[in-house]
Image (cartoon, rainbow, N blue to C red; front, top):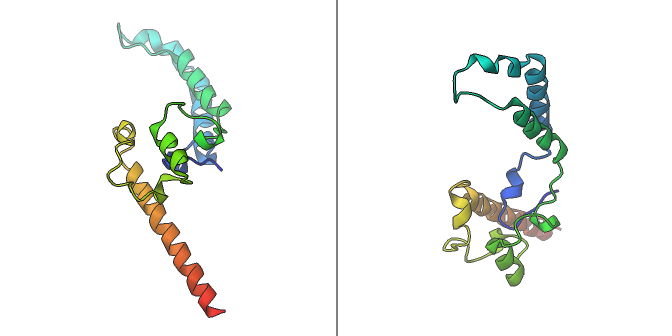
Length: 139
């Protein structure tokens, strides 16, 4: 399972069966319809590099097992990972300073829900703990 401190890996489509099927199907369609043969029909700057496009599709099919930042990948200079490991948190949903944290600023433009997802994770963990306590009291 892919895991990260920031929670982005929870929603990652790399390796997701449906995503890979879609990529493989798209690659098959592009090849079958020989779309690159028709590129000369479009004027000037409206060209498209189908060779590079197919390389991109192949990239997804080959790189389907990202081990995430906890598995040794990710950017080496991630302030989120550095902070979480320094503070001993398994992930940022456990951090009491999540709300005011500015270490997520570089992610928010592309992933505006990243902190919302971490708050959801926090609530799910609290609910699990509550249910465990209830189960313990019943015995």
